[in-house]
Image (cartoon, rainbow, N blue to C red; front, side, top):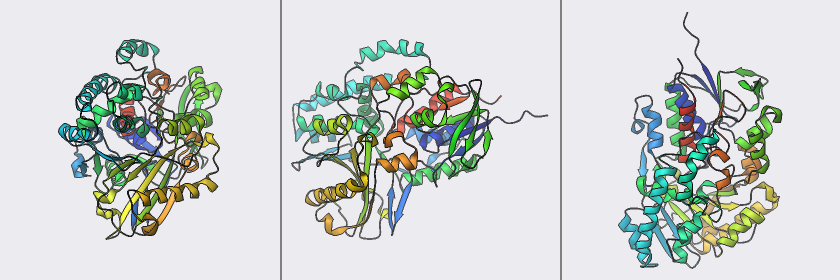
Length: 494
């Protein structure tokens, strides 16, 4: 009689959960992927309003090989499912005085842009990229897929971290190389893409400079939602079962072993392996009893510092803004003090810095003919800041529209249409993100590697974790790499 198939349940269908489900299927598991949302992708859902389409979540695709690998697991090619298009520039930085800096393309392109601001920093930038490569070789190539549930692994890594000055912040790393104020701001914003304050985030995240330089930045034709659909097609072809609009309320744990999950429909679903792509802080607080957890997990949950929240305004325009590139970062009048207000004081101020996404720069299908589709993201305090978003949300919307109307989107107040916004309260409600944090816990050194939530659950057998709050961290390369960590932890079906 053949041995019954080993069953695996994956909680949460964000990119971490999807990639974990595919890797488990490639190992021979019978996989059931479950999510509380109406569609796969987690935060990468899609909003469609009167012909305008908006990717709700991640829009910056780096390290495309991590997606390619998921198809290669089954001897398939990603190009048969989705087309990834390289962008140039990667970002346009617009400063409060109107000066612009286009970042991307070749090294020579970037040096040409630096020349406009500070010719002396051209050689400094080359040294920055070289230093970033050294961090990349250790932080990404060696450690991003290394399991860190054993403290001995952390101890063996310490010499590398000390040599690379991981105790420094990203801001300190950038300032050690670049002298120009504008360039320092432009080259230190990367931690914000993974939920961190550049003045607190460990300089290990400076590897992003070389990561972007190595693979560039891409856009999935049709949007990130189409990338999710491509992965959904692959999962269907490979026999992965999915259940949507189903919330996991708790786990079945006995004798420190997880053997299944309970749903909000009153079901018990049993499994040999359970993988959680839920926010780990939410998992340990709401889905696992304290006496079932290891002390280390309880301490991390109690002392965790969370990433900032996100305010996202989605809108269309009744005209096209052809001089606006795909990704624009508009930096306001304050930098360090604004970040301090957001991350530490947790207060909402009148000023802001913005990330503007214009997918119609690359793919006109996102809007009706002659129109543009946008979303604009403002880092804000998470819900620990106790902001009344019912009151402040519309006011922030008006301030953002006014500022954009006066700067990079002239007369936006007259052309904006079909707009709506999401606040940290929506992240908390819709994605079970503790405190409405946009990226789970912050990327601090004291919340990295062994000190981050482990990929192998702390104190519980047969339970594994992936996603932004686990090692190696947030961002698409991080959450996809967290699934590769599980690849090293979970055995193949015999």
